[in-house]
Length: 161
Picture (cartoon, rainbow, N blue to C red):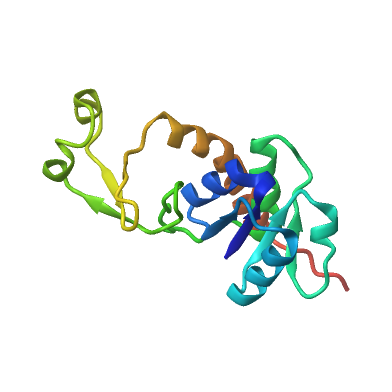
């Protein structure tokens, strides 16, 4: 469970798409972010060195200003979501559920219906999602990280004697 500060709104959206439970504190001052993170058991993601150094919180200082590198930092530090982890709503962080073609027909553009047959709906804000080019962009950033992690985990360890 993560809590992104005001400097990491874009990162929060992408982490949600990857399945990380990520709240976004767009307007909270640092002391309230820290209090919320403690109360909810969340790790703070921040580009604010002072906030990251606060005692009594768990935090990850995100060094890069580039989104793809930020994603790499989080996945490298915290690990990838477990296989089968479902994406979350990038807008509000709620769970997404599968929804049928008949239910979305009147709610998505016709060209989307011609190109896609898998849809999800946010349980909180009701927004409809499908695996379009945005999802391909997310995957192209994350898959190399997951492949590298799988290779590292499958590598036999050497015993020292």
